[in-house]
Amino acid sequence: MKKIYSLVAIALLSATAVNAQENLVANPGFENWTGNQPVSYAPFNTYLNTNLTQENTIKHTGNSAARHQSQSSTIRLEQDNLMTITPGNSYTISYWYYDNDPAARTRIYSSWMRAGSPFETLTDNADVLMANEYSADSPQWVNKTLTLTAPANATHFKLQVRTYGQDNNSGGYIYYDDFSFVDNTPAGIAQNGIENLKLYPNPLTGNVLNIASAANAAKTVAIFDMTGKQVLNTTTANGTVNTGSLTAGVYLVKVTEEGKTATKKLIVQ
Ligand SMILES: [Ca+2]
Image 1: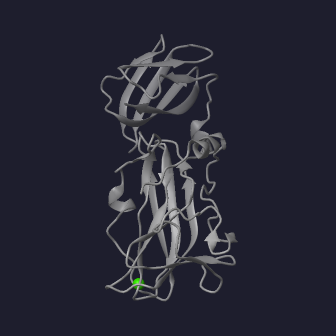
Image 2: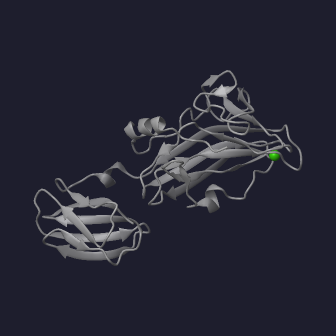
Image 3: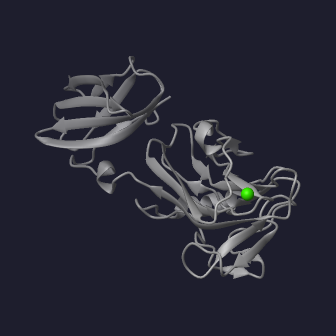
């Protein structure tokens, strides 16, 4: 069965202002529970957000962690709502797990998503987000951290971990705590030192990028790819830039006008 993410949830997420450095995960430390269900992690089917218990002894921080019991089938832990992202921004995914049980093991199984009916699971970064690497038994908490750039066609992120039986055993326990998903992009990068600076269309289709500003004076335009390599450097008096040499992707456009400089993100489709 596929999980269908509701349009109401999307609307709520979209209306929520997202500040840089804010943890976007709900109930990230598994502190809030209703019975044996963490708040914001409703059971969806036999495999999703089931087999959970509030754990007060084996925990990473705070008062509790989530204890997830393995069964013969894979079971999954995922918050109810997808997190809204900005393409091209850098995000850090982090969580802690504790596996000291030969009857259970865990791995990350997360993905960038694209809004639609149904939502599309993107394969970008699947080599690390769905890495075929399982936990090893150890009597200590282990941190998993990934820092990734949100792909150009993504709209959301799904943070999911999976608990498996190990070596044909089940009924073991994995403990989870302190989930985190943070936008690393400095707030300043989207800020604008040039009054009313606008890039359009953005996302860009076609080969002409328009750059408008309050002054509408001559501009120097430098465009960088996400590795920081400069891929275009030109000047424009009328506000148009030929972008025919750019391939699809996410870029940063640095505009200088009358001694002021501003950088904006551009998505080329
Ligand atoms: Ca184990």
